[in-house]
Image (cartoon, rainbow over all chains, first blue to last red; front, top):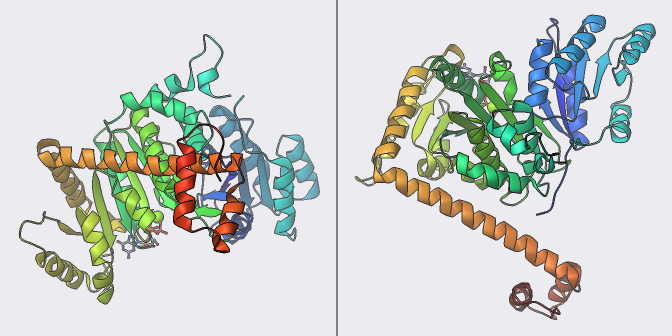
Amino acid sequence: MSSQRKIRILVAKPGLDGHDRGAKVVARALVDAGYEVIYTGLHQTPDMIAAAAVQEAVDLVGLSIMSGAHMTLFPAVQEALERRGVSDLPIFGWGIVPEEDKAALLEGGVDAIFTPGTPTTEIIEWIETNVRPRVEG
Amino acid sequence: MTGARAPAGSPSRVEEVLAGDVAQAARLMRDLDDQIPGAVDELKRLYPATGKAFVIGVTGNPGSGKSTIVDCLIGRYREQGLRVGVVAIDPSSPFSGGAILGDRIRMQRHATDPGVFIRSLATRGHLGGLSRSTQDIITVMDAMGNDVVIVETVGVGQDEVDVVSTAHTSVVVLVPGLGDEIQAIKAGILEIADLLVVNKADREGADRTVADLAMMLDLRPAEAREIPILKAVATRGEGIDALVEGLAAHRRTLDQEAEGRRRRLERAKTRLKDLLRAMALDQALARLEEGSGLAHLVQRIAERELDPYTAAEQVLADLFTPGPLST
Ligand SMILES: Nc1nc2c(ncn2[C@@H]2O[C@H](COP(=O)(O)OP(=O)(O)OP(=O)(O)O)[C@@H](O)[C@H]2O)c(=O)[nH]1
Ligand SMILES: [Mg+2]
């Protein structure tokens, strides 16, 4: 039987703010690029995101953050992933993130941050070069 | 790479799945869906430990409220102390091959419940591949110790209908006001439905739809099996008690009667034939590639040098004969 690894990406919207247009635009672009996107909707707690990432065996976690709470939400999701034993899962995000915060998040282990105005093609390109379907060693 | 080849002393992935390890089970499901060689060997070893879970299919038109109903069912079964697995299927894009899998949105309140395992699955469009992946994932969920496995799928294509007909009990979800559409879909739904749910009964026309469905059912031969019609407002949890009871009642008929045995045999037969078809095709194509290849044969047929029947016969003859190829 012919095997076919597909990249699966979890797209989540943590935090309290109530609109998910930004998340949906990126999710759509990922689908158009041929990825399977598990979309979990609004108001996700970090542990809900981590639990879904484990159950869905995704290759990548993407967070849409518009609320300005990125400096707490990213580390919280990273910790939740670690508690559920998948700290090595790549994680990226998009939203309004000032340059110095971005540098700090990348320093803290977030793999990529995209700010508004970035064409979605750039996100796809980043995934193509940096994310491989996971194979357990 | 897989648990089957784990270093001595550490448990194999098969053992971890049997012990209920969520992360390992999820990875095995992924490998099965991706058809990674070796994953099937692990499935073979899980198979004897399965057959215990009650498998419920939930199908219906897009947006009819399937996920909301599944969310309610998860809640009820959890109250009964049962462990629940969900396979939520959404279509892949025929253009990009990607998919947006959004059924989890309606089930988020169960996201961190250790007794609930939700797995999204894309149809991916390969022939018979969907039911194979679904069956494999159900097998893994069963082996992990889930008592109930719910499969949600949009009931539009034959592939999806095939999936639901492999469930023990199938629920078809409709909404009020279908009118003439009911006529169009009736053949398909009556074949697979064990229970009909008219959801969104808070909308106008629910009673009318129930009456229309009842009339349709009356037109069947007298000995046809009974199909209950239930009303529900899933967003408010209304009608879910009756659904849970209807599912339990149907399950009792399966436990007791020859019907249960008949269905078990029917499912096993479908499964075997599906696999034979898929594996024979894969092997025939592989054998063909040892020789002149598929493209060459296709070209000869297109140019009328060879008819497709003779070509297929030759490929099959080669498949079962060792040695040099005739095509
Ligand atoms: N008025 C009303 N709306 C409902 C009811 N049940 C579900 N909905 C709404 O219908 C919409 C679709 O519900 P889902 O549960 O996602 O439907 P689905 O059949 O799973 O949809 P797909 O998976 O996209 O095919 C949501 O906005 C629900 O809130 C109901 O009983 N009454
Ligand atoms: Mg749904």
